[in-house]
Image 1 (cartoon, helix red, strand yellow):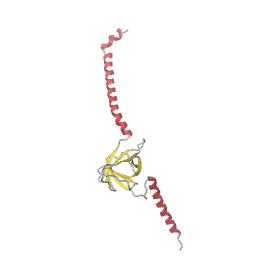
Image 2 (cartoon, helix red, strand yellow; image 1 turned 30 degrees about the vertical axis):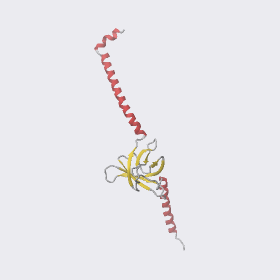
Image 3 (cartoon, helix red, strand yellow; image 1 turned 60 degrees about the vertical axis):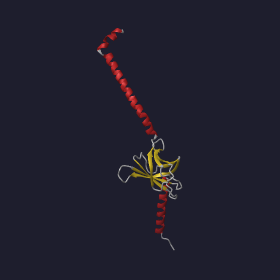
Image 4 (cartoon, helix red, strand yellow; image 1 turned 45 degrees about the vertical axis):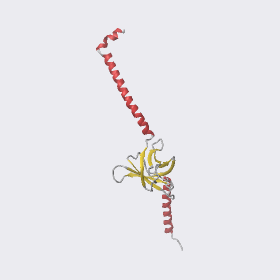
Length: 181
C-alpha cells in the first residue's frame, strides 16, 4: 500500500496547524491539557485590563484573563473572562476578582481574594468584582489636596502683596521715602 504524496503533505499541514495552535496558547499561558475553570466578573471600568493579563492568588499565577468584552446588554459594563489552570482549587461563591496594578509601568492583573462562604462557585459563575487603586492613583489622591492647599496659599500671598503695593504705592507713602533719607 503506497501513500500518496498529497496525503502526506495534507497530514503535515494539519499537524503543523495543530502545533502552531498549541504553541501560541502555550505562550499565552493557557495549558490545553489541564482541566480548567472559567469564571466571569463584571466591571464598571476595566482600568486597562486586557486579554492574557495574569490572574494571581496569594502571589502565585494560577491563570489568565482569556477575554475582555462589553456586556451584551449594552449598558456599558465590561465582562472579564478568567481561566484558572488549577481544577482542584475550591472557589467560594463570595470570592472577589479585583483588578490591580501588577507592576510600576501600569500593567494590570486580577487578584483573587477568596471569600469565607462554604458554598462553592461553579464553573462559569459570575463572581464579585472590584478595582484596587494602583500606585499612580494613590499618589494622585494624596497630591490633589496638597495642590489645592498650595493654590489657596499662593492666592493668599498674592492678595497680601497687592495690599502691600496699594499701601506703599499710594499718595500716603510719598513722604515716607523723603523721611528715611
